[in-house]
Length: 203
Image 1: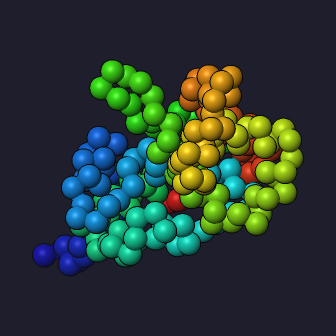
Image 2: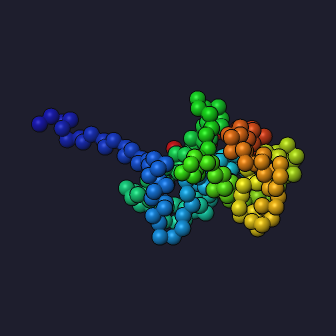
Image 3: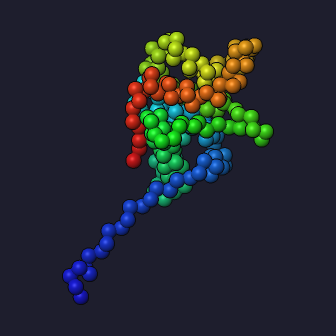
């Protein structure tokens, strides 16, 4: 027997399991306790990427998906969910930092194809709240404030719904109804103005 036969070939690194957005949405919808949908998570991640201050993953994962996913065991479906969220976070950071593809948010849509921006906006606001004191100087900046209004005008968790609907009457409502079309450009502008074009990636 040759001397080399005593040594075992190192195992290949285990490839992280990633879910499609459709599979992730299906899994989240089957949870016993209410979980955010894919669009809300996407808005949350977008806010984290453009945030004025870097927030480490260990501080932002639990508030959106809880301990069960944050501390999931290797090989579990929960780990795959966590991997998928981390991958999307890195993907958003890469596209906003000048990657080969343009940033494309994930929206909820009706069966007729109508875009619903509320879940994305709610997630974006939730992400902002993690470092809201850092956001406040930027919110008061008129140029940035207008960009945020186009997104947060759809948020259903910032104020009572009757107040939100009153604010959306007339021309403001008509403009906001079409704001989903320019959210990619708005987020890119926020990234440059606020986030300082940081490179964000989880390996």
